[in-house]
Length: 620
Image (cartoon, rainbow, N blue to C red; front, side, top):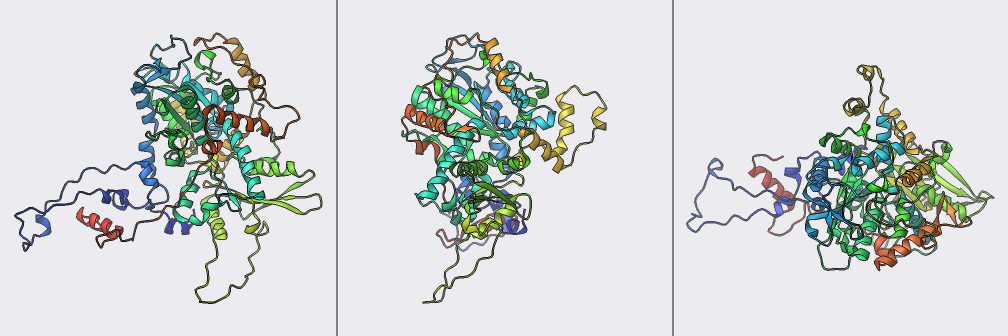
């Protein structure tokens, strides 16, 4: 992290109890007593300080405040953590779906038509970066790590084996599925920006899937906002899909669907708390706004979740859940999209340059580049690496060597600072009547920042596999010993753990790994366990469901059928009767600082904070 960013933009080193201006706004006004002597002077040690009630500060309040770029990690963890997951599971029974027959395996589920206020449908979405972190930790494949997570959240040996009601998660969603929808929509948005920009969209278009980067841009660089992609992240899009479909099509209130996301970084908790990502944007009713994502935990918190229930995570079965524990999603088309078979696109034998282009943060840049290359046959992609491994420029060249499309990647706040400075508009001259003279720009590796059409921006150096919530290399030995992997006593002491850089390489390797027979194994388990305990009828295959599957000759980029994804999105909008733009797009707003401004009464907010600190016996 650069010194400029630490000194000018971050206030996390200040005690939140003093620096946060939110409690000042709710302090009770001291009313003078009737018999008070206006001329009486009281020394400081004789004054009895008033006992103010505890300040109630939500994470949404933190987002609306510009006192710091990101909230303190302790606040985030306390508001959304494994403890909240356990408390919610113990507080609420599982709602039995209206189309299911009675006789749930734990005997605790009850109908949604009954006392709905006491029950919920629990759904989880898991990121591939989380699976990669756990795979590297326990020396299993990325797919096996995903199966272990599913067993923990939904299986009979996981969370369902304990708790007040034996509640567990009904569906486990792979966010890679919604990532495909995000990639297709991002390519469409980019093409729209090239052809005819609308809604004030400026080039270059900047990715908006990283909440740490978005929070930083909103609070410190409002001139960046017109450049941000309006597209929701895979996490947000998954929550919107689940809650809007169940609410609009099947009458299940959004508050009765509890969605937990397992993500690689703590800043995803910030994203889940945004008011723009609630039912208020798509429900269309005068009701309380319900989050599309109710809780976000990380890989480390997932392991704490298992430990709190005395469950050995590495000892969980490494096999798919039977259909008994994996009911169908009510809509056949959505069910085929979320849980249908998929060819593995990310394999360990992927060419090194292609892996470098795709990265570990969702592959937005790579998909847009390949889409543009698909539109320009015989074109080639030229890669120019920057000053460090987290900066690179990409140029799409025609067969004659003419530049057709330019893009870049900027990972890490140090590099983001450089990008922001390059995109900052020039200050107008203060001299009256002075004409602006053209100034030659400093050349860059990519041919000038104004030439960029798209930039993939992520706050973490190395991308999302290096998120703050991932398992750290220093914790690996302890987790393997405590987890009960079957390693003999003393053997762990002889194992030499890798350094941090080598560890990130192992996580990246797990991220790219995929078993060639993964799909066939999943299908075989489904066939073996085809006794549907919930009584739901098997749905049609993806090709049979409304004939939505892709034809061999369709427009396919990176193994993703763009027409198929578009038909899925249109189907989603159709069954919910909500405009597609309201479902997949979001908005951003500049957060203006109140610190240092006169809010009435002749005192600035900073003066009020100082007065509060002095009253508590402290101060600066």
